[in-house]
Length: 138
Length: 442
Figure (cartoon, helix red, strand yellow):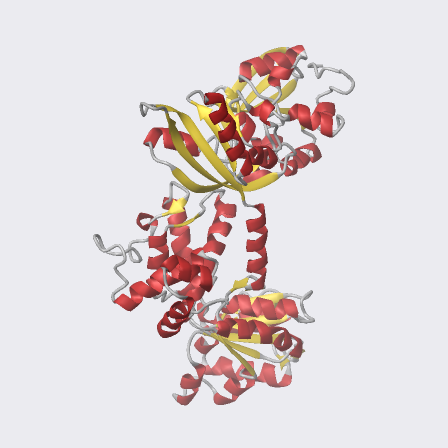
């Protein structure tokens, strides 16, 4: 079972993880959502965000835009992140479970440019585009 | 003809340095200029038709959207500071202004947002802050700058230092700076407020005691002098110690030895002493309340800190400093104080000095809901009376001082630009500044 978190705003992924106010947390087992809840994120800056996620034993974070600094700290804390994603949270969770989160309609504008510029080193490779591998729930 | 007009508008928009985009009533981007592409790192063709928050991802999108406010209030937002995360994940500070877009009938059809990259300004601000700051002390007052100049030399000397200044003027910050600049910087810095403890407690606190020195003294307790060994001890409010303790302290300074309570042997003390007082020790000596010999022992080098009311040119700098500090501490995005608030703050007397100014800003942070601190966010004792927005400006001179200081601040203390803004010759401005005692950085 994996704990997947998504910053949520008005039913959609928050535009910016660094300033998100609410977090949608789902327990996913064998591609199915077992339980879900929405919790408030205290406004405690980047280290506060990281400890908030680690305290809740989050395995995977799917989010919109994110600063390098926060992304690096999440990686160092063992949280796998899939940034630069957009869309309705329910659809994003379904896409994650079905391994189709890499579809263009879930990518924030600029993600393709980033992918081309960095030859798959950033969001493209992290999201499995280089190897055409889908990050399907294991 | 319409296509030609659209082309012209696009050329104009692409030629300006500020990022500009427009949205329809569904928050979808309808135009995106070249500067917007550069600042966000997102191409126009990728941005058009997208929700603005998916392109802009600014710190205020979720909680304090400027465009939303403009739609709701029908009023433009001007220069709201925020930051965006660009396409590379880099944080870019920006200033945002918004307005409603209307069709020929006057109906709202969307909004326009212009934003300016503040990265360079932010770097310049940091440079400026470096110029006017010294070990967490911020000032551009000539007397303070003179103190900044002599401190490194004083720190190296290892001599006893007496810091005089009203409460809240930053005596401990100076003492810490002296410690951090000295060869003792890797050793302890121990601060003791001599006025906070009764005499008997203070004695055992400073010198420690041996087991059995008094009832309940079951084991040895090292005093602050022992804790500060090889480092610096800062004795704040030294004027408050009793005559008996003054004698003991004199011996420590003279002979560099002391006896813990109940000890039979003296202990060597290799400690630099920095003393501070908010009262005039000279007067206390003359009135017989402070030992003359101790006074001369601690008054080897004297640093006198001016009160805030004598360095009012520092108020805008300090306000900026505290706003940035509280933004970090309280996770807020307050950009500035309103011109009225600055005028009130400049006109106030600050009996509690910089600590009081810090408390005023902290109070305003708690009450401020927007991004600019307004008069109503100030504590009541500072706030001007109802109907008198600048109540403390009681004479024309006071009004002129507040007005010129604010104009100077707006123009980064560039006298030429300030004079142009105020519609006077720069020599006239200079003359007024001299007459009113307004200091300039230039």
